[in-house]
Image 1: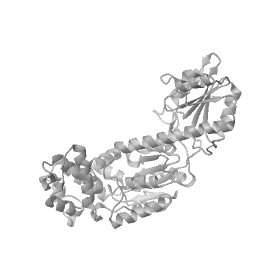
Image 2: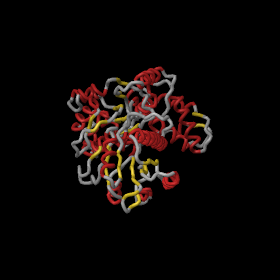
Image 3: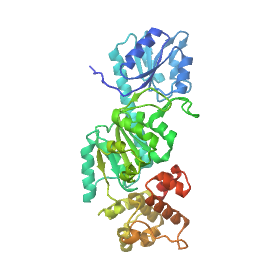
Image 4: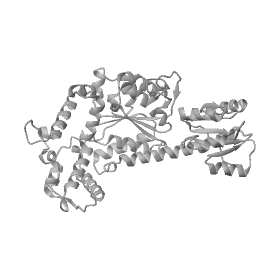
Length: 459
């Protein structure tokens, strides 16, 4: 006998039945298992709800007075593909069940049914939902995949951080990953998720600088219909999407002040409200945050809440910058193999002068900058090895000591491109100001534009 699965993460469920008593009974049974339930007495009301809101499951009676509930299986005019349709009927038969399954029903539930029957159906839906989350996560990873997203190194600094990450992964403690841009903070966060008991759950990322104010709150916690001008329907946030898994807050130092107490509350109580809604919701989510800012200075300057900082930094991990790692050439070699295969070239390695430049350069953009440099070199390589001329000018000019240890030598009126001038100016402004918002103000652009420029320039 199959055992009930027990506790389910919150699911949105639509019950379509023309009998008020059946709808009421189902609502009580489903809400007792933590589900959110909407009801419809006929196909018209059901289609209206399905257009305005998203549902994980629709329990649909076959006979709805003069209507046929199976019409909701027509995905063009009924339930969307992401909604599992469970057919209910008091006139159960094997041919009827077969027909419903052929039409696209997720399951077939004969009336009368017991609470355990519901639990079994919800268990199957939950497993399907978990698989969908994993597929979506894999698709996102493949779409964003960068070849340096790999762990395992002989470097002692990297090994120490990795060992700490594996130990904390087995817990639900909040983790704060601190370090320079491009050192692989996101890669480490994803690895902690993969090593954790939540590995089968979703890994959801929120980029704190990419949106501002109200939009970021909506992205994080969701919003209710009418919460703002363009809010035409209830929308779940990333917190709800991450149910049972991990929520990764990238660049947490740029979280707006008004959102900080709301995140603190969620960290403490696992409770939140959607924007424009007073209903208190809860979510079982593990939180990992990352920043390249000096949060201690931000706390001292009143830009970041001290209590939130302490809650986030139960465990701190600091991946080392590339200039301090002993495996720079090993990483460059892996990148060379990756891009050579991708571009259909046969390149055996780096020339002695190119090798010396890679070792001498300080790599202020860290792994991300190294990746871009090697990709460029492979594109321009005209022989079986990467020469010094194939590397970016800033790498060729770079020195291990002095100012060049942190930035390429760029002078106004010198032999440099506008892109290099822009890159250097943005780098220096960012280095001089802890707040991304202040840096954007000085540069005369909005924060989200600055965030995109940092990404594209490898800063």
